[in-house]
Image (cartoon, rainbow over all chains, first blue to last red; front, side, top):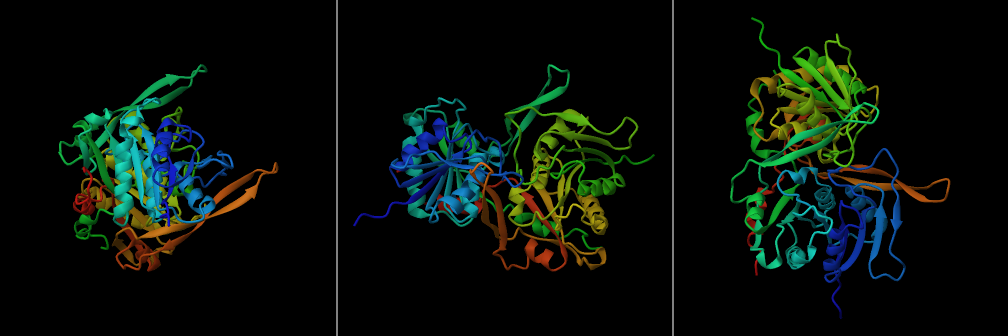
Length: 259
Length: 259
């Protein structure tokens, strides 16, 4: 008897036609049964946004005889996961993978990332989930170099499962396959974006802004994702969605809240 | 000599004209110097979305002689904080408050909330921050009942500061002032939204969806925000933006990552 293949849901935030998700689909198609539900347009930096004040459209874009079912969705990456689980898939997927993102989602970027929010949403719904990102914003980035590592990480997660309440944030340095030194479990580096707004004027004389900025790593720890990536490693950060700062509760309880 | 008043930045996700932010402005105007920068339209459930693929507009809506400076912004709650800090305020604010949200941001709602993401963004930028939410979605909710508690919590934060890397998620039960039993420091309850998509057809025969759902609390702990709110208390959850699941790193390091 042939063993049952795992059902793998794939999404991203760069849109269903992005080379990054195409590379991810190619790897996953060798591991399991794949269903793709991804935004019909770029949805980068959407964070954990969901669509509640407008309508959502879902289009089947694969043909009847295609090996892989693909859908595009008018909503955010998180909407894609919700629609996939509730309206498309007949059973809960064994895994959800998101990406491969064109650009970094390391350190504080995890907060803004649509790629990672899709993975987190799957995690909330009890589905093991991984977000993959490559430190190369180029639309024509070379995803071939990281395919074997994506496969390795995916197989490890399928074999071991993930701790409860945790999804993985995986970032790849922009290196050739042979230059990548290995995989490191990391913590999220303390870093910020120093914003710089580019102020311009419309042809009609009204001011407007473009949000730009510079990424500043404030963390020299060698156990961080930033350190791993700068030193040629793939970074894997376990990400949780219980945001409680448990270690501060005792201290906060010493305040005079009820006087 | 008159002591210097704290500079307080106010934002929200329901839009600058919402009664919730009007109530918050009224309380803060008695505590410090207030600047309001809020979305020009509702931005609920935007999570930590930022605007990078389109332009941002900022409009000063207060008049020259008004006691309080107010701006509306075309972007998300997080955009509002970034624009306020970088383009409007001459100095870093002493506090950022977000809300009062029309509706709950307790437990897993914190992840989807624009109100809380604005507070988290301020926290990332090193500004003590609090998100306030009232468990009443009504546009005409009675914010008078919670003003004294908002004042109390704000003064405690200004006096004590907040632990590093932490902002507060404050939710109020829908009760009369005298019925509120007190303030409780809590952890985020484990809960999920069970989605239910309302599938309809356009007048032109195309399927579309509305995202709806039912909130399910899976956590019976008496130290949770859900318990506090159900039992008549104001819930205060310390929220962190280091998402690393530190407690799982040791376990993940036992996997065969590099074989």
